[in-house]
Image 1: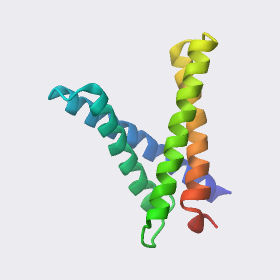
Image 2: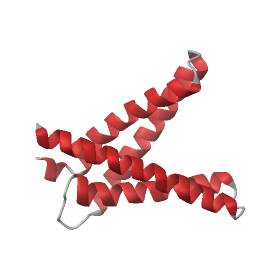
Image 3: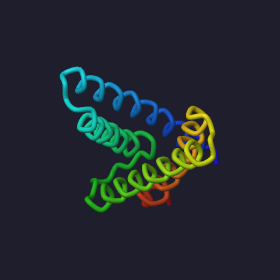
Image 4: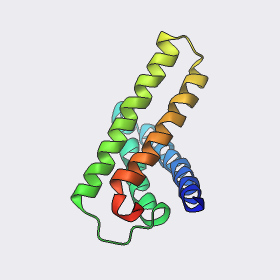
Length: 129
């Protein structure tokens, strides 16, 4: 059980790093007049790439060669989490009138839990067993 908590803590640290990468790339691109929606796509992708590498090698310590199937599962989990957090943000803020900050916090926490479980149990499942 302690190993699970350590992996979750590492996952959270990687998530903070991903957010930093996302913001840095976004603001770097927009500062050179890249349209913000293009910058968002690029920065989100950079954060995802950072997440994949750090979670694979540090959080879950997978040493075998990466496969397209593993990368595809990682992308699928991230797309599901993106859809879930967007839906929750919309429901909490727009539909139920919660303040945006509270809606964002709850959506982010829910997304983080789903992302951790999906990443551990599906993306890197061979290592988790």
